[in-house]
Structure formats: C-alpha cells, structure tokens
Length: 486
Image 1 (tube, rainbow, N blue to C red):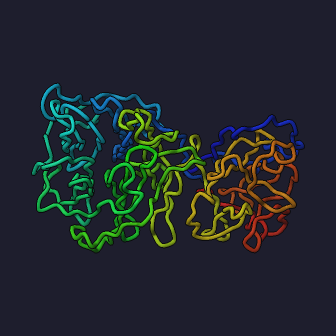
Image 2 (cartoon, helix red, strand yellow; image 1 turned 30 degrees about the vertical axis):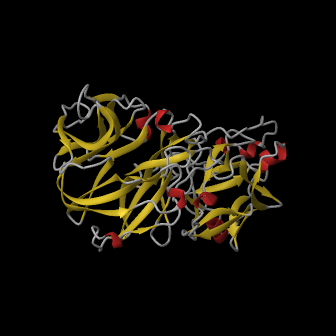
Image 3 (cartoon, rainbow, N blue to C red; image 1 turned 180 degrees about the vertical axis):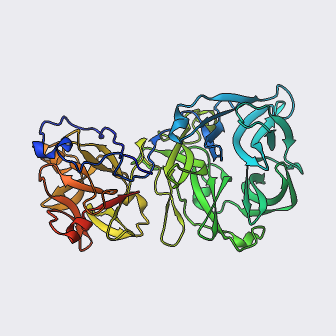
C-alpha cells in the first residue's frame, strides 16, 4: 500500500543546535518522499492495548479486525473492532459476556479466541468453577449476529467430550478441509499441547494426540509449561507457536513445525525448534513475550500479536504474575527466512515498529549491522540486525534518523564516508552524520533514497557488500542508492 514513513522522536535526542543548509530542506526538492511515492510496510505503535493479555485478533471478510483478550480481573470477555490494526488501540471496547455467579464458567475467564466458522461466530475460552476456581476447562460461546459485538451469545458449554483435567488455551484451524482443535492440558506436572479433529466448533472426535511436552530448560522455568498454541500455514508447512515456562519474565514463544503433507495426528510429524523464537530482551525493554495469535496486516504482511511486560519480574518472593495486570498487547511484522521458516526477531521496543531496507538492485539483500559496520547481506537470520526505527532527524526535524532495533540509542551514521551503527555521543557532528533526507528512490520513485544532511548530493549506497556515502552520477550508482522499505 502507498504510505509515508512514520517517524517518532529519537531516544534521548539532544537539542538540534546545528542545522543543515537550505539545500537539505525537503520543501526545496520535488523528490522529497511523500505519501504518494513511497510504498512502505505497515507500521504500528506499541503497545496496542494496556492490561490486555493472551490477545487474539481475527480479520474478517467484512473489513474489520476483531480483538479479544484476557482482562486482569478474569471476570468477563471484552471485544473491540477496527478497520486497521492500529485502530484497535482506540476502538471502543464492549463487554459481551460475564462470568457466572455459581457453577461452571464462574471464575478465571482466560484466553478467549474469536473465530468465524460456517456462518457463525465462536469464542473459545477457559474458565473455572465459582466453587473451584482451579477446575479450568475449555468452553465455547456462539453468535449468529453479523457484528459479534452486538450478540446475543449462546453458551455451548464445555468442549465435548469433556476434558478430565486442567485444560485451557483452545484454538482451532483448518487444513486440507479438516478442522482441528489444539489446546494445552496438564498431565502430572507437565502442561502439554494436544491435537484432535473437530466435528463442530464445540466437539472433537477420536483420541487426542500429544504433540509437545516441555523438555528444554527454557520451557521449564518456574513451571513445566507448553500452552497457548497458535497456527500459521505458509510455504508448505504448518507452524504452531506455543508459550513456555511461568508467565513472568521467563515466558517465551516456541515453535512446532509439520509438513502440510503429513499426518498431523501423528506426533512424529511435528518437530520442535530447540530454542525459543521470541523471548525477553533487555535491550528493547520487553519481558515475557507470549501467548500470541497471527493475523494479516492491511498491506498483506503477516503479523504476530502477543503480550509482554515492560519490566523484569520473576515468580516468587511474594510476586505472582497472575496477579500482575500489566501484560500489554503488541503487534509486529513477521519476516520469512530463505528456507521458508518464520523469523520473529526480538520483541521490538515500544513506539513505532521498525522497518527493513532491501537493495533495489539486489532485492534479496538487506542493510544490516555487523560489528557496527553497515553492510548488505541476504537471509539475515539475526533479524534485529537489519531492523531500524525511523525517528525524527537528530540534526533537522525535517529529516529522518535510523535507530537500531537491538541497540537502542545507536544510529545509522556516516563516518569517513562509510556507514556505521554507533551510539549517539551528543555531538553536533554525530547528529548531522546520522540525519538524512528521505527522497523518492533515485532508480524507482516508489522506493527510498537517503541523502546526507551535511553532504548534500551524496547518498547512502552499497558497493561490494558494504555501505558508503557517495555521489551517484550514473544509473548503476542510482540503483545502488535506492532501497525498498519492508
């Protein structure tokens, strides 16, 4: 979709005491990037919602995104909708169902998910009994309303056949015309992931198959947990994320993978990745990311929706994360590795989500930093090395600066006409070296070129796999100074 790059104020930005010459004023150039000539990725401002955990977002054919999540009081189900993902942050929220005062569905209303199945809306959620709050089981609500916020909602009750023990986090997906139910269930001291075929949205059939149990050290911190399954099907494979360990700063996202041609009800069809695919990150200030869902952004890109806290706390010493209300809903783009597997990177910092820059003339290669030198490489599996947050120009508010995602406070800057990612030292020279005018792409007006603020007429360009600041007088040079935003 055609859009402009969104900027946000720079981290710890010092006063811009040195201004560039008038030639760097974007108003002086017809090539300045505008909403009509830059095709940029969808960007979001995190968090999307405060005190909303276990988020689930469903994009429906009516043009709306429907957002549902756990509230910290654990006593009701709330929903909001908007025509954009970012719009969910300000959309009016409505209570669509409240817990019972007695009996089943009377406590611990957890992890609701909304799905549209065979012409009706369904919400899968977990709940305890009013008289036994830890008798957690999966339940289902149904509505025939065009707008699920309007209801009414029918209680279909516990998923059938009823689960014998502590069970939660039910999700559903369709593959090859077959609908499946995946959920978490405690057996002994382990919370495992189970899978079964469904005959309708509240009934499964056959013997459930355990496809994952906590085995790695990162899955057993605080508790032995695999829970919160979510599915995305791409590139000939079914990817099922899940969350592991206690719901404090140890919480992390793991990944199971199966071939689309395999028997999903054969546990051997599923392979577990040895390391978490999304985990706490002290540099970006996000802790305990987990219990995610997937959706598609307005520009068609895949997005992960998850929760985290912006501080580090651990189970014990009087702290119980279940009583901590400050899990926040966040969204960020998923990228895909050359081998077809998803790359979630790190939980990005609060604020505007970052972008990547791919070379116009080598579209499979991205700007990334390596030992602080900026280079051009394909298949950057350490995704955050190639992600930059677009912020207001350090030396000129009309320009932009590019802040490293995994090194906040470090910026793309030129030094001796080479491009580096370095810490802002507060000097006027650094601010100028790290400020660029965003221009319509020199080789493709729908893309982006970066002109130096203090060396007008010189652009960021790649040469022999490295990035430089140089004049680009010929067609090959202009192509090397043009980048696609994703």
